[in-house]
Amino acid sequence: MNEIVFRKATPNDAQPITDLVNLGAGEKQLLPRSLEYVRASIENWIIAAESSRIVGVGSLFDLSPILAEVRSLVVAPEHRQDGIGADIVNRLMDEAHARGISTVFALTRAVSFFEKQGFAVTAKENFPEKVWRDCMTCSLQDACDEVAVVKTVGSRQSPDKSAISNSQF
Ligand SMILES: CC(C)(COP(=O)(O)OP(=O)(O)OC[C@H]1O[C@@H](n2cnc3c(N)ncnc32)[C@H](O)[C@@H]1OP(=O)(O)O)[C@@H](O)C(=O)NCCC(=O)NCCS
Image (cartoon, rainbow, N blue to C red; front, side):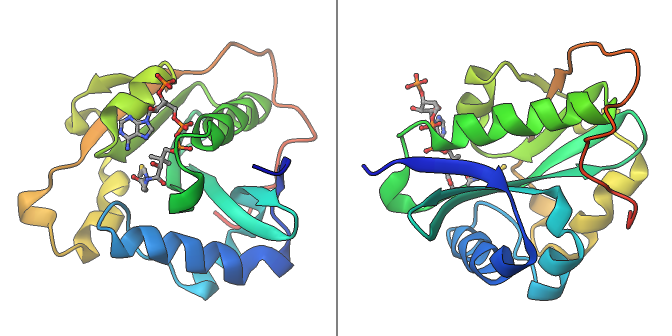
């Protein structure tokens, strides 16, 4: 494997991010996202790149000043089990810390993966109603097999000014 570089996404990354997320959506592991959605939320994304090719992505979506969701986490199939997914999650947790977020959760079928990153299984009902906005458009909403996992973010006195701007939400 060549060197993998992790960085915040830029607008030029929107198309390859969308392509990778929708590849994962094709595997029925996460929701599809439009190019417009990715463009509008580009400041929330972290990418892993091998040379100029994006091989892993994930985003942190704020649901309130203290709660955020790890969303659209996916690694290119040929790069799985190389530690890229774990690294992206760690960086999203750092980002949550910088924003002053106290709790991060995910809805996932990759429960063991998240448990290895320090998340614990919890009840979906623990999260506010707006969490379910995405579910309203999902064909599996009445037979959802995703599990909620949650992790507390390390304490911090006040949000870091270098935190990714999330003002569009
Ligand atoms: C889930 C996913 C992002 C993990 O990324 P990855 O780079 O392959 O994972 P890592 O190599 O960092 O794995 C870290 C650990 O989790 C384990 N793991 C990886 N994928 C797993 C999965 N799908 N289910 C359970 N455990 C998994 C690994 O074996 C590894 O264990 P170890 O520390 O004991 O060696 C990747 O498999 C993927 O893109 N899957 C399809 C999309 C998806 O399911 N996204 C999650 C939606 S929330």
